[in-house]
Image (cartoon, rainbow, N blue to C red):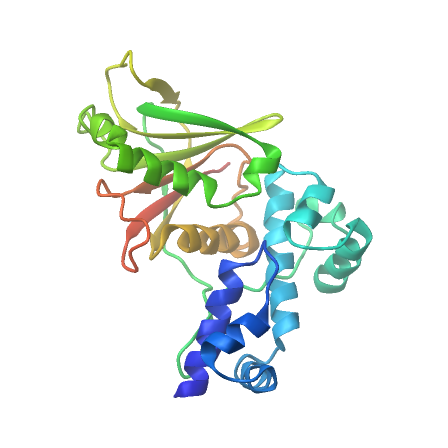
Length: 282
């Protein structure tokens, strides 16, 4: 049904531009329908108007960033297109029923809205398969890049980093160092005070003079299955982990490194790409 396709394309457009200015009028031109038509179709199918959906999705993502602790409140407000901290706080309290500061406290109940997928109905992505693992020390050889907190606002940066080293042939050189331990390419995000470090590499027992070397010491991880384009699948899993899984499971997610493990071919934009998200827990 055409209106279902229109609503799904609207949702996809919103999800792709959550931290940017969202121009629904531009989308209506692409869909060749009026603004009035798409807003009526969206509300009828989703049960929220477009602005409500955008706001609730942004506030869900805001909460995730608050819990990660990498950004200041003003930076989070700016990232998700709020005019100022007062507007952000008002919207946040209206949706979550707590202040942004209080939402950091363990056990505080908050709301969430996961990305919606539309077929003939609307269903939240409210379950992702996971397992708990305790791997031995893992040595990773690869390349690193450091970014400032302002650069960290660009969620595409680490994936562009991966695509650039793949295109340049550097990734192929890194893959030759794989030691047969844990398969796949590791994308590691490491918060280091005022900046963030990204590392892309493989399991390797032998350090290389050409590449960086990092040891991941024994820890317990919750490993979430990712299916689909990596950027969106990772965001879905983080939403699920922080907003549902950590509350229901009783585990506490440690705001430390995050690890994405992808296939050796690094086809991260493929709709059936299979990957994992590792989150340290206690």
